[in-house]
Length: 428
Image (tube, rainbow, N blue to C red; front, side, top):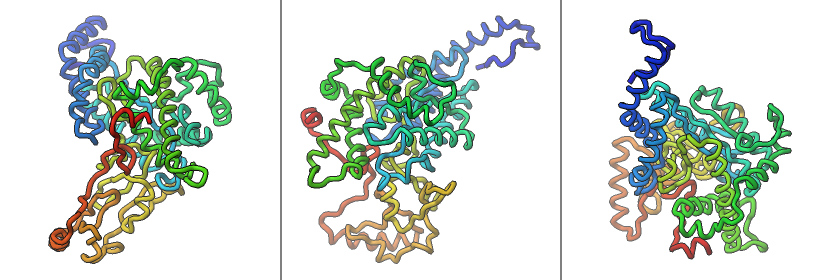
């Protein structure tokens, strides 16, 4: 396919109109093939933690291709939008280092930027991804100060510029609302108007007649998002609202369900605002979905269920692999040390082997498995040690009746699996 980059074609003598006509004709013929290539690249970055991933991707293919076709036929940059990067988890005790982005966010932004770069290799006009920070939509529900939301947003933008992630753009909630504000939005003005942002959003795009229980019961996308909210809220808020005489575990879980439903109600309004502001963009999402309306993305290329950088920490293993888990899980592992960047803790790194390598006997834990990476990943051993360990494990396995296998996390952003036995339990 030829892409128009000059006003005239000196060799052929074609006029600008002739060149455009030739280009458009060429594009129309080859658009399906090019759009397919683009979509396949995007799918490589999609959420793949579930057994029905391929079915989900196939469900939305016709819709996604129709969106991409519009850009390809016009010969313009493919534009995508992703509501994400709100603020760091409220659980600063166990899940994340602090309020500012760290190596986890850097890896996620780099992954998204790389996706756009790869699209540019098959489609010269390239691609741009606009991240829509949704922090102010939810932060007050989770006890996150407006100032922390501002600080996180500013730092993530600075990071993208410093790291050269040129295919990433940012939009804030202010871009979704229409009321007078100073041209340059500083922290004090941002904080002063945070409540106004939320009020305008809900008044303009909210639905007073929305029956959220009915939506959870009948809409699979809403149900999956609801379950995801419940999982991460239970772990995010446990140190903010600790259990005690005034709060039982039962009442805590009951109130978490209420918060999850409030987030859904706000999410419906926010989705309406996004659709209004970005009507022609390819819609990406961080949430598990049916795949019919948006592409669910995995922001971190790791094997665990922690796929959003604001809910976890990351660790660099000696073999170059990055893994993700709660900060507290990594801190328990003697193999890992904290790496500081800009004077702040940023990620974990596997220590040199001689500093932590246990004996073969110490590598065998009570359930007969070898020494594990955080969240259940086996540390890679050299071939000789691995052979010896395997022999010891075989002996132990024969003696143990109830061995637990090493498993990966099967739910998003949470290490504790939550089961559900139907819509009645979901709403209870």
